[in-house]
Image (tube, rainbow, N blue to C red; front, side, top):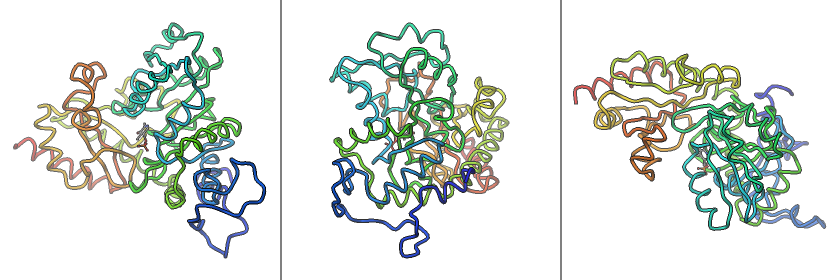
Length: 383
Ligand SMILES: *Cc1c(COP(=O)(O)O)cnc(C)c1O
């Protein structure tokens, strides 16, 4: 069982099948008979010990070629449980300069507990050493950044962390284990917002942390205390979503590539950010490190926010909504939604212009999407 598609169906399954059931039943029971287990292994939903949690834990670990994984109630629960496990008051973290908004916010919030961080230029590994302090414990990167879809020198991150004895953490949400396997690449811990490609259907909020058995057990102790476990019903939906990840993500990759090429060639489009395009600054690195360029791209229309909003309003297939990674295409103007918390100056510094549009390309037939984009561009041009 080496192939990801086979593992996504069978790894960690209950055996023998309970009552012959082909899918893992939903164990909607908050508590289970006690047989003398240690506290963190007692059968109880908050302790992530139901059969749904156990199967999901093994399946997600197998997809990452890792020893262990832990499901969490959201991507943010995975991030917070991981940070709270690794860092105490007085400890310091090195992070890449452009991070998911929720991650930036929790890092600022953690200053109240005396946990500090320094943001480094992700594209300049020679500058990272200067950010290191006596108290630095970990380094935190993302596989592909939001919304400019940039890719850091991830091999340099692993090297840097090993050289300085830091725990390396990567948020792999935009890539999913189909396009990048962080543990195989040498990272200590991988985080997924399973709300996105892992779940894949825009119907759950969930997260995962993946790594060695020892590290995952430590993070589970924190998650048990914070109360961030995933509900068994959501475990079931995540397990169901994962069964097709090996088919879904390659389709997202291929379709996003065609959409990026179409937009690049369109006279109304100023700029397209997609690592699959040869003119993307990290295209060569992406080709070397990733098995696919992902389903998310961003672009700017000539004419700024007014044209952008007219275009969004004229689309009939992509839904104007935050989030990404679902079967249905989702599109949003980040400056108006996800990055509205930044000042105009901060948005300019991070390259998130007011007219920038982020597109999570779904599983619709690509030709239908291209037709819809063309029609909406024409409508926006006419005003
Ligand atoms: C959505 C997202 C998160 C947070 O996940 P939730 O499931 O919404 O808590 C973290 N990192 C990245 C890159 C994301 O896209």
